[in-house]
Image 1: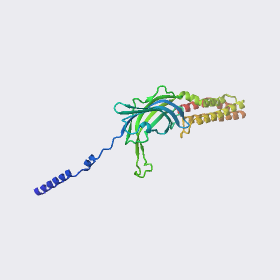
Image 2: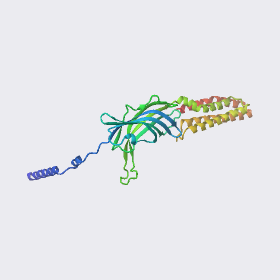
Image 3: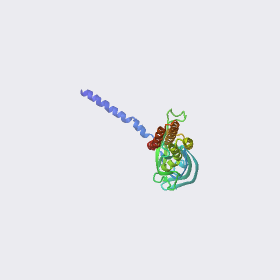
Length: 328
């Protein structure tokens, strides 16, 4: 028993000695040069103009100041940044200067056109977030990392957008991953690149009430005209039918005008529901008018009067209830 214990102790001592002489994996990694830390670049934006909001084309225009503050190593971020999903139209009032502490400060006023996906399901009660997304086109997240200069970023108080209210802004930095090796066979399949992205968001709220009545006034008038046909005496058949048919054509014209101003939303929008509601109401009124006239010519006066009275009450009541349900 004592011999076996002594032998085990001796083997353990030799093993520990060898372990001390041989380099370990962790020790070998410790001696390797550490990868250089990515350059920290402070970035911010200040919007001075929002214009050209185009629902049909899915785009908007914006003028803004953008600035970068960094240690000065490497190329200027002002020369290598790009607006994701947009196009820089001009870059003016360029400022390049050195700050205390060895920092560089570069800034410029930028005019850009940016694509914007619009969610129009609640139109004209829709609100939208306009985004300016900036990345460095030359350096990935391993060599350059953005930090949002949120204290100085913002929107000029004098910015006005017709039909909209500027409701606020926010900015942040996110990491964007591109899962592709872009056809570079020297890289493994499934390789991906990471880029630091600065995102400035401006919140716009539409003047819904005023836009609502302006946009759908034609539909309301056409629907009202079709309802008024129930008050025309059956013996005045010509004017009564003309009112209903005229309302139907007027609603169709308004529908075409609405569709010309809006892109294909890919889903049923509030505007679509309004059109269907109005056209349906006008069609019901037209059917009621024809039915009342048929009863009149068959000398069934009591029935056509009941039908007219029912239309006078039921049509606006049902229209109002459905409208209340679909208004967002």
